[in-house]
Image (cartoon, rainbow, N blue to C red; front, side, top):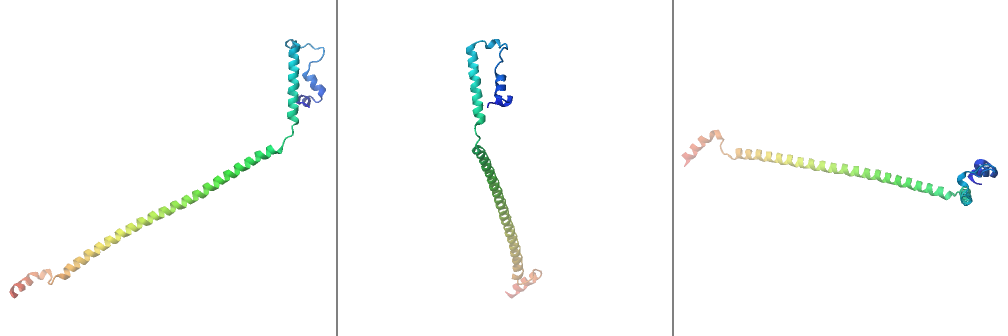
Length: 153
């Protein structure tokens, strides 16, 4: 059954739509019998093609294939998103560890500088105490000590 027959209802009605009725004047452009035969053959081949295409059984394989591709693309997208999330989390963790390591190195350097400053201050203090203790006589009494040294000689 062609689409024209489906549209018209019965095969007779379809032929009435496609073929001119007897006694009606035909189109002057279709007066040539060879042209009329060629058009008739073309019309019949189009009807046969549309009948074959319309009555061809549809397979679920095409639908399943389409769905399987959609499913595969969905899983691939989910995998990419999962990998992106995991790698982003790992990158963030690595970045935090690196910042903590850098901060610890800076703190260690500051503590080292502070210890060096304290050691220098202690050394200066000990040197001053050493110089104060190493004198036999206080500086205020030094002239008297010199006089005593001169008399003893």
